[in-house]
Image (cartoon, rainbow, N blue to C red):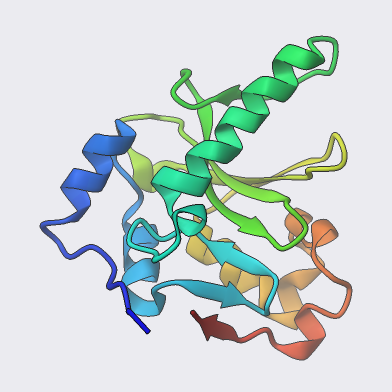
Length: 171
């Protein structure tokens, strides 16, 4: 099995150039610590160095943004509360669930990725769930039974998520 390491300090600038924007420091640290895999067998955070393109931010992440654009064009009467990256204040995908729901950063302000907040969007409904913090903070709250109920994104996760202390499963 080939193991793809996360980008090192010199590799991140190339990823950011390809995407056309910087990325939050906590995301880079998360990828460095965990690599590619699934939280609780349900939630994956895109890794720019993942073996499969579907789990790369510049692969599957961009594909999910293309689907958002297509859906917006097909149903212009359905309100979209956010722009779609690279639009100003657009959503940029950071991950996906096994059900196809997506996790995004709201790229506001564009020049300060460490100030970006997270948003979770339902694939099968009009649900948009903003979280007023970083990706790492949201993941910490989602894996802590004491704070799980307070996180809006928990509405897309399985009911037993927090009670089973979801572990990270490396690919």
